[in-house]
Image (cartoon, rainbow, N blue to C red; front, side, top):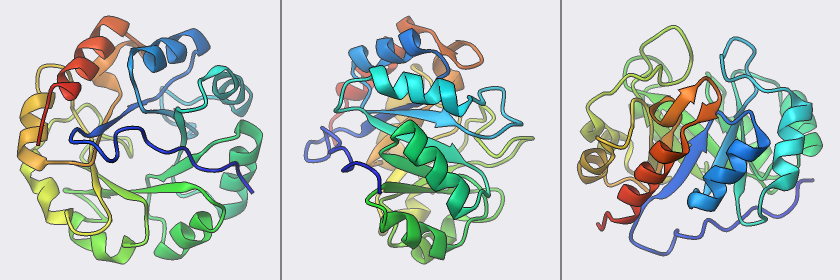
Amino acid sequence: MSSDPAVIPCMSQTRPWIKICGLTDPENALGCARLGADALGFVFFEQSPRNVSIKTAAHIASVLPDHILTIGVFVNETYDTIMETVHECRLKGVQLHGNEPPELVNCLLKENLWVIKALFAAKPPFLSQAPQYETASFVLVEYGKGPLPGGNAESWTYEHALDAATTPPVVIAGGLHPDNICQAIRAAHPAGVDVSSGVEKAYGIKDLKKVNAFITRVHNQQF
């Protein structure tokens, strides 16, 4: 059993919550937390250039403030593998970024975790399948065109996120950066936003100036 899920600080407010994904360095992650990120993501997928070891992710999670929602990103992993990583890294949530069935979402929710299920505009599972994952804490929506399961830095028509905007709440991702985040929020009215390559200076290392610009612009958005 994991520790109690974090309460995302802005959930009752008028702005989206912010996840910075693909962290690989403790000081860099701390910098993102200090700038106002609500959640930080660790990618456990060997083909990703942002793949992080369990040992490193556990160390990063151990130095973060308690209010940060720590999320492990998995692609078509088994329940046992996911839960082993959750325990070793003391994660507060998981993001399922492959073709995972709704049953896995429900099993992970029973472990007192936040569960985010990724859906895609250009490949299955499609945005229209959101009702199948209605028990998830959030659905994360992105384009889904490219060599990797993630956004591949591909901007897309963020209004299409509204196709999945029923239950659960929607997080938008894919090609976001400081210069387009305001437009994306106005188009999709998401519960949350997820950024990785759009605030990077190298794979897994965030440019804190870009992170600060991104977070500041999200904080200034009002629905």
